[in-house]
Image 1 (cartoon, rainbow, N blue to C red):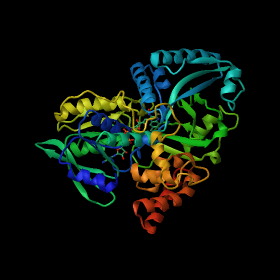
Image 2: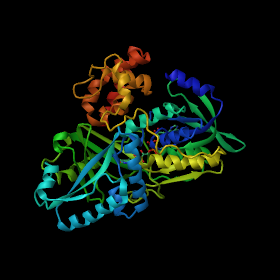
Image 3: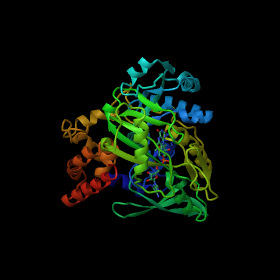
Image 4: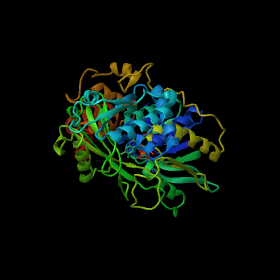
Length: 508
Ligand SMILES: Cc1cc2nc3c(=O)[nH]c(=O)nc-3n(C[C@H](O)[C@H](O)[C@H](O)COP(=O)(O)OP(=O)(O)OC[C@H]3O[C@@H](n4cnc5c(N)ncnc54)[C@H](O)[C@@H]3O)c2cc1C
């Protein structure tokens, strides 16, 4: 469906059952759950799907080894159950990942071994394979570039990794498959009331300026770190609920960690863990935990965060990565629930809180990607009550997401690949260093709501997050194809290219 057709549906639907504000993991999880129950569902995203935190995660579908160390058993157990659900329902986007923790003190080997056995036990029948103590030789075989001096062995365990932005695009497609509507570039700017109750929103088409008054039985605020802003549209004097924390990542070439095994550094100087993960033909390193008082749309990693990641990794790798090895650096803001600003955020809650205001606005704060489906289910249970909707059971536990193949596949496009093969340019690569074809760009414009060069190079493909220089070089070609698909003038195409170049500067 074209944007014109999607907007026509928005204009002609008199009232929705469920209206979701925010197209990140949380909002998309709500919209899929509501649509799968048969409620008429609308999701409005101010920018692009996953433009916020949901494209900037560490790409792990995990119980959270660190949360286990904090004794948060319920959270870990639930997340491990969701890991199994996601592997089943999105086998093109979520994959088992082997990790090895290199150990330099016998005591750590013992403690970590016990902890990871508990992790296996919590996964129960959904375990992806038991954790295992490794000898020095086995550790080096799994991690050929690990620092060998003082190494006493390692511990291997299984978790899962995914492509976060692609999962968001897939969820958006799933909403449409289920008969719902999800639209990007439609910021919500006000709430609409009936008898004092929130019964819809005022939104604006960010591209053409058209204003929409949209009626809905219940409105869900899933605006991530911006959720407090929406809560204030409802209750202007309400206090902030979120204590955002920034996490940075850097991406370096594969030769820093060849092979398929990821490395977990169990203790960083600030009492956290650091992951070094093979991802998209490169290696992803992260993350940090830096309290922030503001919530910019495009947070930049601080120089100190990049140095911290590189320094920490250097202690564990034979060849230390330096600033000049960084192919891309990005940051995201965790929507953590907390009180008071400036406190250390590493211990604040990763769990979520659902609140229903006096006027019936359902707000959600916190959470993680791994548990997006469970959160969606709980939020829609609450929303059905708040909006007086017919109560229906959630139907997402066994819902295969859009384009899911029958068996695991490394092609993020899943069964959509067949449609792409028939489009012009299926064999024309955009850039020698990127796996992106002309046909994939056309597909993104026609079927995945890509509206800008950034939408294609940051979230439909992950080029910006993987290789900033190659992404910048590819931008003019992507703009030319999008101009053809979306009817841009030459001036618009060069403006879009320039906007992308400026954005990419922040990822260097
Ligand atoms: C550094 C880092 C690493 C992480 N790693 C992991 C991990 O490995 N595994 C894991 O499970 N979780 C991880 N997380 C957590 C996970 O990424 C987040 O919990 C999740 O992405 C939050 O999704 P969200 O939908 O709540 O927020 P967002 O993704 O930010 O979505 C909110 C959306 O609301 C939109 N919006 C805001 N205002 C409006 C408005 N007025 N109208 C319409 N739309 C609006 C925004 O544009 C945005 O797209 C990580 C988080 C960070 C920061």
